[in-house]
Image (cartoon, rainbow, N blue to C red; front, side, top):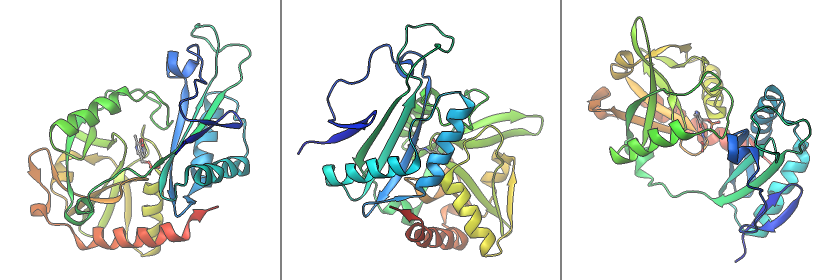
Length: 287
Ligand code: PDD
């Protein structure tokens, strides 16, 4: 079966050579991306993802060429053409093609593409039993709130996780009080202590859509939420821990490096948020 992608307004078979080697995304990582879940042919939190991308494009002065409805129609067309009902919609925008000088070119059209892949396979037991994570120094830059395509530190961190038989790598930074966790290589971090739900404050991390959803769910359930600096020592001593992302949803974490969290048991609040998030998904699918 032919797989189609959307590129600058048209649909093409996926291997069609479309992008110039002078594209600034290729040369400089001068671009942004989003990853959106497609569930039963509909898209989870579509408008939130597009808003995050549009805001970041504005920040980077990359013109954003499409309206939300046009993009939703293109995404729907991909589900139809590729016969994918449950998948991952990858969206990328780059500043476009120009001779390779660092400064912004005077005139370029951005390149914009959508790729719809089937949902990656992950064993159900990850959600049922919890996963191990490792720590990795946060060697990234100061604009981590932007979902840029500069992902080499994230790639290195995830590779290290894979080589350590871990599911994810949590980035760490240092301050006077010690080592703290910022976010995962592709996820946000949560811990629970004495009934408080804690998550890393929005200080040079990506404002995760799943993170925001979990906070919203918790607040509706009258669970106290603290956005705070999450120290590794406190994380290890927490009663429960989990990570969140578009793909991982609410994923319990039972081990960090060689330290078990709560003796490796998944907590009740994590399980509750896991099932509440499933309900949230059903209510937030967009056509
Ligand atoms: N990554 N932090 C980072 C660095 C991320 O890359 C992601 C998502 C998240 C979670 O964001 P959200 O809940 O909106 O998915 C946090 C996607 C899934 C990826 O890189 O594939």
